[in-house]
Length: 59
Image 1 (cartoon, rainbow, N blue to C red):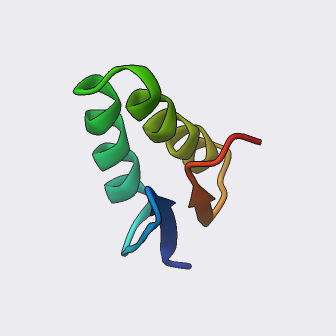
Image 2: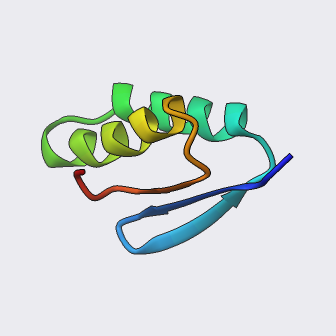
């Protein structure tokens, strides 16, 4: 299985599983608001779409 790479606020992280990344970003979304929540949401949606390289940029 491919590792998942995320880039949020310019920081690149690598995840062993998609589920671990999704869990992290879901929790981050729930604990934030405004533009911070938007960044986490962008990554979470991309993870849900099956992408293995996700940034906090909008489409």
